[in-house]
Image (cartoon, rainbow, N blue to C red; front, top):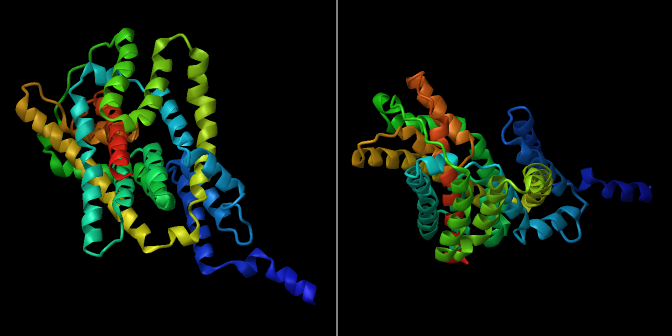
Length: 376
């Protein structure tokens, strides 16, 4: 009988706490959103599954020598996994629309305002006792407004690793909800006539321009914001492999096998931070709320910048493409195109929106470097 009691006491059912049970349900919820609703499945499937594993009682899989903790130590604490994914994103990115219409760089930059506005907002709320975030934590939360998952994970891993799970889930959830969150904001800030604006076809960009651009971009940004060099450097390196035309094997590997393998390990490592004692805290609600605010402000400021540019220039641009500056590539660009088609069936904005979309990736990397330099 004593042996049976000991066996029962060693089971996960006996050791399971209410908090762990809730986190397992949250992990299952993330899997449901990924599989049934197709919300960022490439990340939410491993994150959700990792979150379930991390909350299995009696197994130290997410701490100490546990395999998930080892993934975290190897790839997120060092910053390797987000950087490798950024290299893959660079290899899949076409700078052509941005180079064909360089003005869209301002739209990508304006959309990053949500990051810094949320940083200041988190500090104000903390000063008033509503939340309890320090500067590093507020910076890590603000980066959610860039709508760039790898960047959010990289900054959180550097500045606030204990908030990594909540920040990653928030960032990828809002990225998946781009088609729901952005259109009401875009319609609210634009008139029907503005949404009908048709833009001229983009010029053809030469291969030489595409080769020189990532090199010039890296040098200029690295000299101004050295802490942005790791993220932007990997991004530009991946893009150079894409455009130079002499390393097709490497380019194919980075775009496919390498980024896929890294995504698996990254997701499981992030899932290890969904432990009940780290996630089920009051700060998580604050992170989710502030993340939504950051994303909404970024969308709004991108649209407003486009409207301002139309006041200052005789060559009009459709303000809808400003919303693509939040850098959720390519979903934000598709949403801008869809909303434009609703007002004008002949208004094809996809390629035009890819300019600020790509600029947003650059902007979020620069913003990440500034935050790390400022808050470290």
